[in-house]
Amino acid sequence: MSICVVGHSNPDTDSVAAAISFANYLKAQGKDAKACMQTSADKLNPESTTVLKRFGLAAPEEISDAAGKDVALVDFSDIGQAPANIKEANVVAIVDHHKIGDITTNEPIYFNAQPVGCTCTVLNEMYKNNGVDLPKDIAGAMLAAILSDTVNFKSPTCTDADKAAVADLKNVAGVDDTDELFMEMLKAKSSVDGVPIKDLIFRDYKDFDMNGNKVGCGQLELATLDQVADMRDDLLKGLQEVKADGRHTVLLMLTDVVKEGTDLVVVSDDPSIVEKAFNQKLEGTSMWIDGMMSRKKQTVPNMQKAFGC
Ligand code: MG
Ligand code: MG
Ligand code: MG
Image (tube, rainbow, N blue to C red; front, top):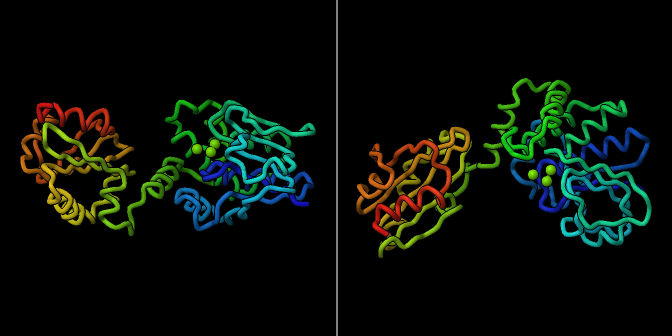
């Protein structure tokens, strides 16, 4: 029976890449194994889809029920994140980088969990330590997984081991510029292409009462403002329609997570209130505010103060 190597539910790039990587590792050791995931290929998140496409890898096979199967787990060890009926499965191995979860076994198994930023960092070490040949395409997916889980080394979970693994894997995968790879993933994650304007405005949107005035504020997190360059007019028109529905002001935060700032698009009965709130002049219908990332901590409190709340 083939060992199903599977990551957690609602899979991220690490869960997908680690399943592919560990299945290949087991096969190299003479075991019958296949990569699986807890979703269908068309429901995989856009970042993972981009990564698989870039490195020419097929999406793992969908698994929904683990009953009666031999399974190896990657990137989790919690029952709550497992395929259905995991208690009726035979768990044969676990490779992870999270706290130890509540899955138990009847027999001793291979278990390798380390406090590093990504499962693929652990897997890279396993390949190296055991002299297992790592194919170029799989190395690429593992590299992408580490960049994703560590947010391009910016996450507090990132360790020296993750950085060392990236240095190894970029050579094997033939990726010179890991920043470029990270940006491609970020763009996929924050994709706006083909999304209806109103869906973009309401993707992450809240209304507030500010001293008796209804003020709406949406936020789009972007890899670069270029992503919305062609739709500025349509966004503005959409915001005007939202404002026409009984609001004093509607703001849209176009947040550049790389430059760490926000282009604030403003539609208001009194734009001077917004200028007062951020102590800056509008250029047309928007203003760039350096360092503005958080609606909750930055945008709303300043607006409330300007409205005299
Ligand atoms: Mg994960
Ligand atoms: Mg992970
Ligand atoms: Mg993750």
